[in-house]
Image (cartoon, rainbow over all chains, first blue to last red):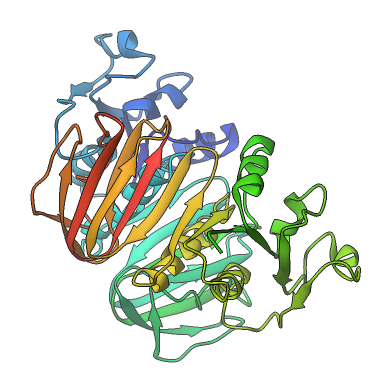
Amino acid sequence: MKRGLIITGGTPPSKELLEREIEAADGIICADHGFDALGAIPEKLLLVVGDFDSAVRTQEIQRPEIPAEILSPMKDETDTEMALLRMLEYKPEEIRILGGTGSRIDHSLATIFSLEAYVDGETRILLVDDSNRLEILGEGRYTFSKDGYTYISLLPLTDSAIVSTEGMKYEISALSLMRKRTRGVSNEILDNTGTITIHKGHVVVVQSSD
Amino acid sequence: MKRGLIITGGTPPSKELLEREIEAADGIICADHGFDALGAIPEKLLLVVGDFDSAVRTQEIQRPEIPAEILSPMKDETDTEMALLRMLEYKPEEIRILGGTGSRIDHSLATIFSLEAYVDGETRILLVDDSNRLEILGEGRYTFSKDGYTYISLLPLTDSAIVSTEGMKYEISALSLMRKRTRGVSNEILDNTGTITIHKGHVVVVQSSD
């Protein structure tokens, strides 16, 4: 599988973003409330996973044509993490997560932090909403396309990280960034692509519109 | 000074929250766009700080009765950090930050991560919005009031943290939590108060409504 799509709870994506991501996906897994964002049931739907202790569409999950996995509410993993684990079984090149951030800051942070568990895996995992595209990256050299986003920010998730950039408005060369400092916010890709080299540490890379 | 209030950019607070926090504050500093949230100029306003390269009320900042500090847009600190540094000069017991989170995930993360720089200081610093109250805490024992919030979540900001709780729905005792795992989300204070003991590490504590 090339691209997997996970739709999870939080602020629902716009109709445009949802349709674009469903179109581009090879397989879809919904985590609990993420299922509520779907209007029709796409043929690409692989699984709906969650404890459904609060989902408004619990009844609908019972329909035989919907592949569902009901989890214990006492499990250690969040619904989003379970959806990720199931999607990784298909070994996609890339997974996009829609939702996962919203009014509850604890949920947003937990979703973002949990992506660090997959930083050294084969699959790139992106958290996408209508204003942002977020990824956590470990050591390596990565190319980013502008893709209509204005800003690109580099935020160390480990205590510190050593990072270089090429093709950015504010270039850095093997600069040590600290998590508690915020020097890497609001850089810009000058032309169509820029590269980020992470020499040490884990970095949250966020591309955002204004 | 007992309580300092910083009003910064991002999603503007509701009128109710803004008025409540202004009423309870002993002094107020606005960071750039945070100034736009104010209707009238409160007597408690100590300073407006920012580069104002984009503020819609740049003209108003020039008025002589408004104490303002114009920063270089190329500075290393964000406007919110500069507001924090200026507020700390008054040595308040507690600082509340309104705003600082919003549609741009990089800004939200940068605001939260930057609070870690003050984790061992004398002043407790809380990030407050209409659904959440967030604090970063280092080693020590802390009492939390329910204060109408439903959930309390513990998220390690350091790679790991060792934490105990008392008076919570899911009690933990010297449990090692990892940032990339999300086991500490959606705990609940059972009665009016609960305590959190951090034996090691830095922890983001978020109280949130549903």
